[in-house]
Image 1: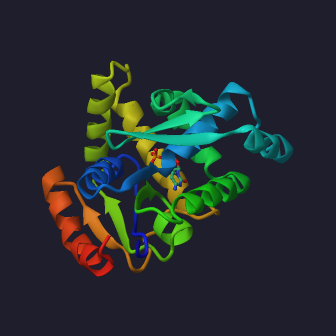
Image 2: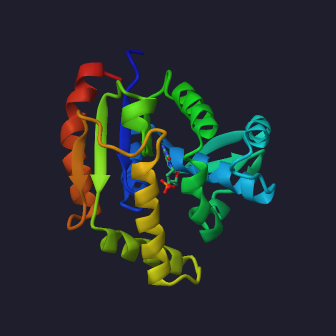
Image 3: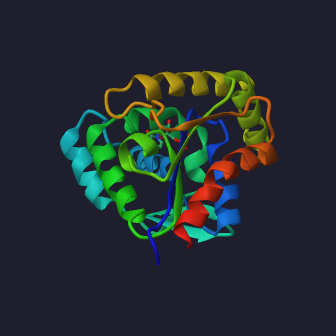
Length: 228
Ligand code: DC
């Protein structure tokens, strides 16, 4: 097989990165990796085990005890934490409220980036997150930077959670998104920034099919060049 293809999707919280990544994975038969799920699973472990976020020794010990795995089913990415399926639990508010603080910890990032780079070594993958095109795969074949109006993002997230029967207010969601944007873009360790060579996709007013068509125009030449 010729060189594997890596597509990096970065962007703000709740702006449709995973929806686009899953649709692309399905269309291209690539593996989808949700890097945010890894930070969320670590956060869940820290919450369950009361790991103080300023205790570096406890954090390093915890990181050695955390084993994360992805299982791909129908192009959805399911994550296990020490063999327990936690894909649902990591989306709930207690994790969402703490995950930006946990993902700002250097030791956590070093370990997650190491695992992510290993996953992209030999397979065609699509990975979404905040630092995929800048830190994890600076040589990715295609980098996409996604953004959308925060109000629209909050609305989409609200509808998603409502469908799942979670009782949260729109205000709570908007505040969480605004807070996470702030933390993700201002943290010291690999803040969310657009890589110079990333294409920008603002999906405030465009639907999923239009997004897919837009990025496919950039992907097609890669497929013919690398003949997978
Ligand atoms: O994509 P998400 O909302 O599930 O990500 C959860 C949090 O994890 C987000 O607030 C920032 C962090 N994150 C990160 O710092 N780096 C990544 N590559 C992915 C997520």
